[in-house]
Length: 178
Image (tube, rainbow, N blue to C red; front, side, top):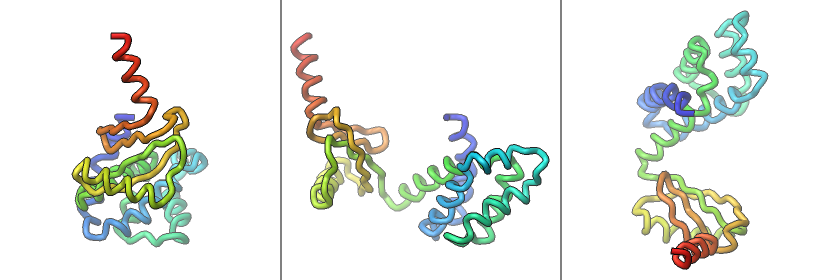
């Protein structure tokens, strides 16, 4: 999806310049707008050349207004995307906006893969250790991967820290067959 990321980047950067001081609130409504724009029925509506862009933007904003109010600049942004037939890029725009916001705050997002779900205390201990290892503040999410057998595999951006039993067994296999 490199093309979609390329399309979304300038929109995300422009939106971040406008909402930089209020990024958490902007992320709230932007995530909701992105979720609505991902709906297949809305995508079909947006792709219909007989439906005006203002109507499509109105449907998106109407669906979101109940859960989180969209500021006027945000509504204009959605209208612009509808006019340019770029509503399908909204999830990627939200993702890139989040990356810009996290970078500004010095936070990186990581995923912890483990064979079983970690409890809150174990995840907090792991988080503090990983923050020292990676040298940045981390926001971690969990994902189960039973193939790891034990241990964890952590992915932060393009860095991977793998202490799983599966990785150690693979290293041993390579060493023994070399």
